[in-house]
Length: 174
Image 1 (tube, helix red, strand yellow):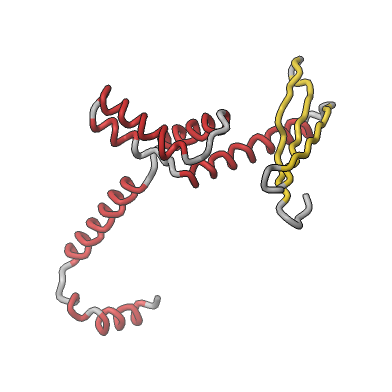
Image 2 (cartoon, helix red, strand yellow):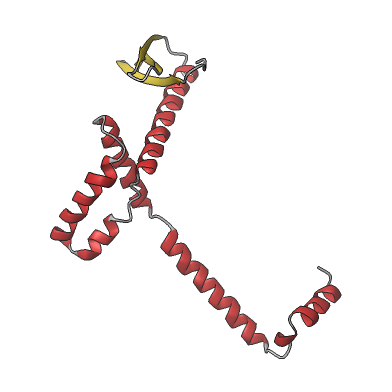
């Protein structure tokens, strides 16, 4: 904004602040920056909490348990154990781990996408020979699932790897 327009705006819209000294505005700016840092510290989830959340999601997925088990069983049990063993401060830290059923679902989807990308990238960049197995099944609600498995040799060992799972909703095509 042009200096003349800025000065006119300040005098017309903020006339009550014209008599204030420069250090008043510096103090306001400093307070705002401190509040921003404090709010960011409160809202930001630590890297350790993120890693723990992914580990919980991985355990749930490997055990084929529902996503809600983290919120209803795992984190409450962990928080009780940690409180008994290490105190209230440690319990507060445990409760910072994201563990809602939507979060766990999203973590599992993210890990699945990463597996698919990693395996696909390994197969295409290394020009490996591979065998692909496709299996289709229908669950009790009539939704079809297509599972892809791949077998290839990686560093002189045979690797059997889950590749992907595609779900066909009613009327959709794969």
